[in-house]
Image 1 (cartoon, rainbow, N blue to C red):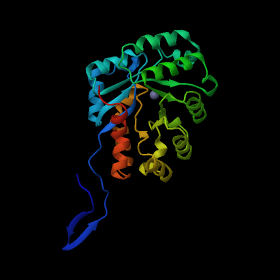
Image 2 (spheres, rainbow, N blue to C red; image 1 turned 30 degrees about the vertical axis):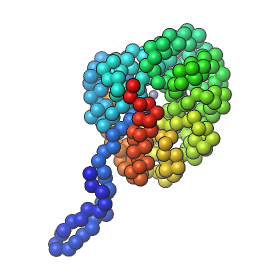
Image 3 (cartoon, rainbow, N blue to C red; image 1 turned 180 degrees about the vertical axis):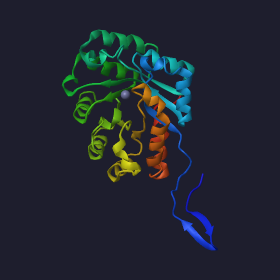
Image 4 (tube, protein in one colour; image 1 turned 45 degrees about the vertical axis):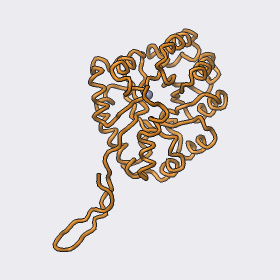
Amino acid sequence: MRHGPRVLLALGLLVVAAGPVHGQALQIFDAHIHYSQSDWDALTPERALSVLARANVFRALVSSTPDDGTLKLYDRSPRGIVPFLRPYRNRGDMATWPHDATVATYVEERLKRGIYRGIGEFHLSASDVEAPVVKRFAVLAEQRNIFWQAHVDDVTVEKLLTLYPRVRILWAHAGMSASADTVARMLDRYPKLWVELALRLDVAPGGQLDPAWRTVFVKYPDRFMVGTDTWITSRWETLRDSMQVIQEWLAQLPRGVAEQIAYKNGERLFPAP
Ligand SMILES: [Zn+2]
């Protein structure tokens, strides 16, 4: 690990190169991984785990369609995998689950395994926040003291946080399009909100950490996590490159802040069993 300016001797002159202050790559808690049915033929569970390890990921929050994919990884690496229960038995459930009582039963039964640290990732629109299955999920999350991972926009996340104030919510993709200022406002107002940054290339356009995001990270360093989101199989193939991009903007933050966002927050919120 090398900190501070690199000192070079050239032509007898002492040259202090300002060069990039790149520390060692940080270990990573990846808060957004899927190992869904379409991945299983392309990638054995062992191979998936090795892809994560090669990208410096020591622990990953995983949910899958169907959930069996998550269990395939968890069975082989209970310390490396944080299982979230995705309420989708198949892709068709994605659109209909809030009003499908059989989804509630499925989730309730499956949670009895006692291994799950959250329900999600799920998608939801603002008009469905009071749908019966959402209400049931709130009771289940509270009873078991587990999270939700919600892929929702800023309007919907605020409704969820208001209607279900005791549920801890991990906001997937920071709402995908919510601005840094909007995210900051939410974090300020709702103590049970955490944010993961999968697919948020606007955090560091062209590799340069955006100043607005930087401000929010420094102000709320204990509320953010990174993620890559293997929502299609090709994302597994490029996971290491995606993580390299993340490492590059993390390196532009104060080391302590970068460490919290890279892995300490995930480790604290989801310790190994
Ligand atoms: Zn996802």
